[in-house]
Amino acid sequence: MRHHLIFCSLVSSAIVFGGCSAPQGVKTVVSYNSGVLNPVADGISVSTIEIKPNGSDVSEKLQQFGVPLNSEELQKRLLHEGIQLRKIQIVDLPAIITSIGEVNQESSAWHGQILKWRDLHQRQIDPKGMLISQQGVQHFVQRGSLCLLSRSWLIEREEGFRIYLQCVPTWHIPREQSPIVGRANKPIQSEVFGDLLFETTLLDDEALIVAVELAGPREKQGPQSEGPPPVRLGEALLGGPAEQDLVQFIVIEANIMPRG
Image (cartoon, rainbow, N blue to C red; front, side):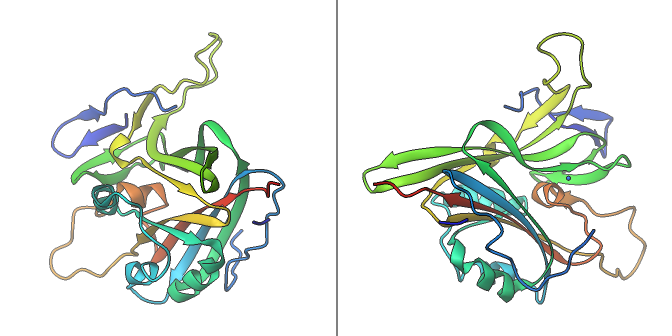
């Protein structure tokens, strides 16, 4: 223990995903500081870590540690959007990072138990817009924010206490402060990507890594391409497109206080 998207289609005008309600100084370091937080309650802490990779075999390196989630079909859907998941022992995190590369930036926050949906990570869409590929279909996103929503709380099982964790990528356009009671917090439009929802339970000092590889620009041979290539949903969520090769981690760590 420690411590509905507004899209402009490439072939038609605006497309809006369905109207579901949705329940962003550089410091260079060489490794992750695992002693930043010292919570005195049950819950989760969340670290965002940007890594400059020393090679291209990130997926293989991740698979040397921890275990995948149980659903193979879900893993395939997430990988299609550029998201890799791995449940690990938190003590292995420095070794994982060192095997992948060098830390560029990191930040941490204590969330505790999350009984209502909350943003663990948010990426605001650039006002110039960006080209995103979601389920293989290309769209131009013009406004709003991509988020990783989560809820999490302590549960008791026969084998002991665990932290239940549920996360889902979403998109929304926030509403300006409204004088009408009850409307201020409701987004103008939103989309919950329910087919990418993942959940797990974590023991004390276990963590879930949400990893995304971001590729920098590549030189192209032949005719010039028409604009930048699309980025997958998971890549867009964690900062793509990137100016250089990067690996982005969201590390969600369980903290369970001792009983008895």
